Length: 282
Image (tube, rainbow, N blue to C red; front, side, top):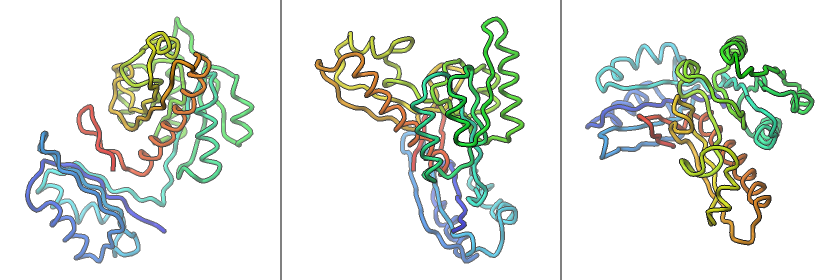
């Protein structure tokens, strides 16, 4: 079934829900799902509606024109999404396969509503795996002495593919600031452990030395500040003194791939609204 997703945020006030619902009702709009949140601390209001497309007598372009007066009145930051147009996703990976394989498997099983337009990697290790799925594999080595040229190629591949979203499925390179800015809230990363714990190399070795009882993963949008962007999803799994570093790495990989796929799904379904460096997830 074709639907539209109406997503918005604005300064909180009286009459917002009434105005939006009234507009939809006046035009025969059938609301299939409705989510609202009022943040008392920031004074902001957030809303997400799923509307049966065939119930409206007009398409997205005319919707934007007719809805504009309401948007202006309430200072809405808003978008309407036609779900019949599949979201294009570019994946990026290095040598570790667990997150990449999980996303490809879910996509292949129609669990993720998107079109995967390619995989970019700074290594060739995963080429045959990706090509089995019939997806283009782009090997772009990153020269430590000339990262600018390498990421110019990455940017060109993203532009040529018309990707809406970029997913770093354990891509072990830092994204340059200019790309973070260009693709703001469009690059999704998975981070081992809860932020900001155990930043850097061998996080599970660090965790084992600290005797942690929980390990986890964080899915977040990429910003210029390393591993500090708005958080989309997090989860944890319990460990004990009986778990070796090898056990923790295995358990960590399990939670990483689950959290990344879940965060990507929220993003694809327009459930994420970014407010500053935090998020509202419907």
